[in-house]
Image 1: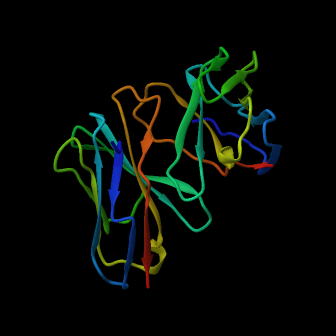
Image 2: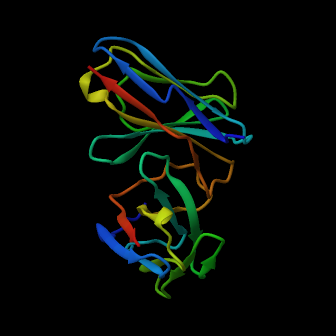
Length: 112
Length: 111
């Protein structure tokens, strides 16, 4: 069984569009995260959610919004997509006292 | 969180031990050393973590110096599948904080 899954795996879209990336974890973890990996391969935190509360937001543009319908899901919504949003986005989850974060396979977003 | 310094790349022969160093001279008393790796096109994978004692699991060993200013991740018998970018991260243990990834070390295991 896949622990952390993301859909879609690839997403190609035009500038200005609105898109969503879904993330689900079946580990019963309390906290979920979104990371962005740019073309230079730097991995940076975007958001984390703990029990439906946003606890970290690292100066990400407000075009990006995480939405958590329940503890097992943290979806990433992006409005008015820009060229610079092209990257690989990784979802992750961790238990309440996290020594280990479990990452999903990533979603490669390409904005044309 | 303390900063870490790692060599940008290393090579290792298949079947030999891979020793990946990490400097974290500004580490504070409550900060743990974590190691993750990222195999090409995959999500990062947790390897091991430690506070001050050496640690070993099925994947690797972590050796932390007595002053805790540096550590070494050891893959005892590297295989081609261990080729990846290895990240050394320092963070307060048990916190809900995010992982701050640096540039890591690109380990190439060669036949």
